Amino acid sequence: MTRSRSRTGAVLGAFLWLVPVTAQAGEAAREPIRPLPPPAVTDPLRVELGRRLFADPILSGDGTVSCRSCHDPGRGGADAQPVAVGIGGATGTLNTPTVYNAALNLAQFWDGRARTLEEQAGGPITNPVEMAAHWPDVLARLTASPYRASFRAAFGTDPSADTVAAALAEYQRTLITTGSRFDAWLAGDAAAISPEEERGYALFKSYGCASCHQGANVGGNMFQRFGFFGDPFGDRDGERPSDAGRFAVTGRDADRRVFKVPGLRLAVLTAPYFHDGSVATLPEAVQLMGRYQLGQEIPEEDITLIVQFLATLPGPLPDAGPAGGDDP
Image 1 (cartoon, rainbow, N blue to C red):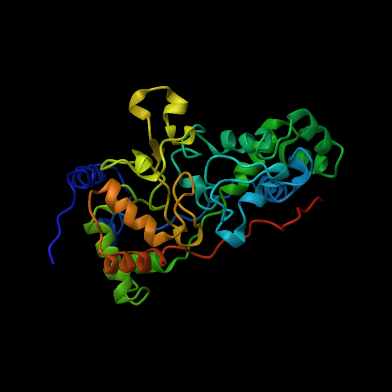
Image 2 (tube, rainbow, N blue to C red; image 1 turned 45 degrees about the vertical axis):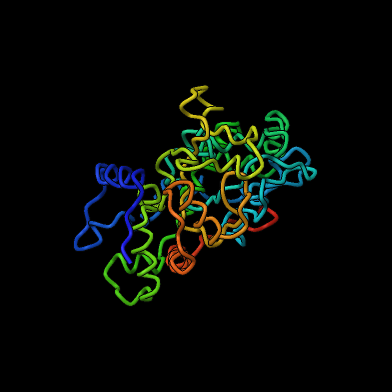
């Protein structure tokens, strides 16, 4: 059976090869997906402090919610909920992205409003439907706790909003899921993935999925409009405020319904899908992406093979800290 990519997919695919990548020997150098780089640990004291803070509810308003509450390593660094659930059961409006490999994203949050992990870290802490804390209270608790000595050792100063964010960011930069079967295949181990999984990867490329889902994180490195073909919001149940995407950040009409392309490294572990968590299964997500982004109805047998390929992308998950925190 012959297939042709949609015009949009073809244009994006052509653009892809203008993006500079690190050359590698052999066939892998011509693949749109790159192996994950090893994490760069610049300061072990700050990493360890961030690891403890990430799992400790001391950062929340009532001491019940930690970063780990929504970014659970048992759920692929996400929370298995359609939208985030915060303090007192308050619900947000957007799906929780995985914390793993977030350091590779061009920006943080679905709308990209935070340029760095440091900028991102403070958002959930003070968000009233997430951790609902106030910085003066958080810093007073940290200063009165054994954490004070850890901050002085890592930063030479008492806790501050900036040093809390810096510690969390430094820790998150270590959460890179290297060692996947697919990366072994890229490195030349032909037996690392099955023939069916390799066929799924070929379909992933031929349909045009790799036009946006590429690079080391298989996405996360560009913004794109949701709905090149058809109207996914109208077909769902109408548009909601959370569907504004980048428009909420820039105020530009051209940025309506534009979102950061999610990385797919852990997609098989992080259902439900899309910015609003409205899609329960990965096969359905692949089907809808084909329809609305590529203008194609992908046959069920091809979707099955693509999902099998996606299952080769996760590597071992780095430790995300003990569930209850680890106050020194």
